[in-house]
Image (cartoon, rainbow, N blue to C red; front, top):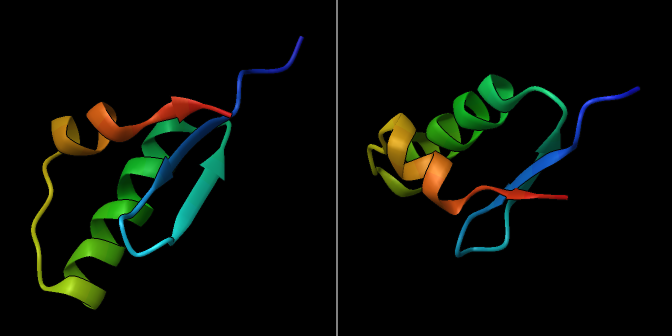
Length: 52
């Protein structure tokens, strides 16, 4: 049985989908920092995550 896919989407439209929740958090945090100059906590990203 495979893991559920997790997805997080930035307000700019950038989206990450993965079975690995930690990967989604890392990629969104890097995107927020590099593209928007924002720091996001793990809890911030988890709050915007949904099952894909």
